[in-house]
Amino acid sequence: MDTTHFEEIFEAKLARNEMIEPKDWMPDNYRKHLIRQISQHAHSEVVGMLPEGNWITRAPSLRAKKILLAKVQDEGGHGLYLYTAAETLGISRDELIDQLLTGVAKYSSIFNYPTLTWADIGAIGWLVDGAAIMNQVMLQRTSYGPYARAMVRICKEESFHQRQGYEIMTMMARGTPEQRAMAQDAVNRWWWPTLMMFGPPDAESPNSANAIKWKIKRESNDQLRQRFVNQTLPQGELIGLTFPDKGLTWNEEKQGYDFTAPDWAEFKNVISGNGPCNRERLAMRRRAHDEGRWVREAAQAYAAKNKRYQAVA
Ligand code: BYC
Image (cartoon, rainbow, N blue to C red):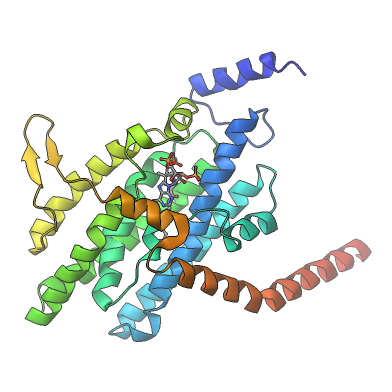
């Protein structure tokens, strides 16, 4: 079939910054690109619940426990909005989950690192959620309507998460020498993996050209990484925590900090399934999926029964 006419309409919509909606015609590669990115994002949310969920029972106060519980629940909700957005592209939830559980689909590299102390919960909120927001603010203007709308709500919730983490780090940095050392150790361990979250350098990012052309990504991996460093350094200074990079210096000309690149060999290793916790995370997700089977079946049976009643009434 000659699709030239449809392609012109699609390109014209992008040029006018109008959203592409599920029933609109779209190139196959645009659809595939979105399914890959949105599902990777959804998987990251649900796998991201694991390292933090690990600390719910050990939170140091009832207040901290309630906040962490709410945060982890939010992340489950983010996964739900994102899986639903991906489904509008014509792929089923079962297929998406299957891709995660069989190791075919990626999820964010960051969740393959362990959470060793309570300060790690602070570092995740401050640095990891901080990096996530930096990336996700631009996604509120991504070209695919359901993804953009999901991101609006996600960003609102993520900003609470970032503040929750910064509050923990502030309290620990102002606490006893042991608490302060714990906070500093967490920053030292999370700094480099956080920089990797933005993806490989632009010159080595195979998906970026199409993502920018189709307005899926509005800014590049390197631009966002730079903005994150610029924003985070003063926040660390304010609470007296330092970053494990001797190359961090203010560059007057670019009005930003110079910084050392993370270890990209480590990044490749982690996204190939060989990070410190990859196997543990996937095993946990598979177990949760199996143990939740009866809940899914009960919910489906309940929905089917309700439908029958509605049909009779
Ligand atoms: N981890 O061409 P590139 C969160 C893969 S936050 C794993 O630059 P793209 C949360 C990439 O998939 C995290 N894989 O790709 C926070 C590609 O492989 P494939 C989730 C990565 O898509 C707190 C290859 O490397 N956020 O959820 O243009 C608590 C080449 O990369 C990573 C999102 O997913 C990585 N860090 O750019 C709870 C945001 N980086 O697929 C939860 C949406 C790259 O070709 N996603 N890869 O086999 C994006 O903005 C983009 O997909 C990325 C990568 C910036 C991540």
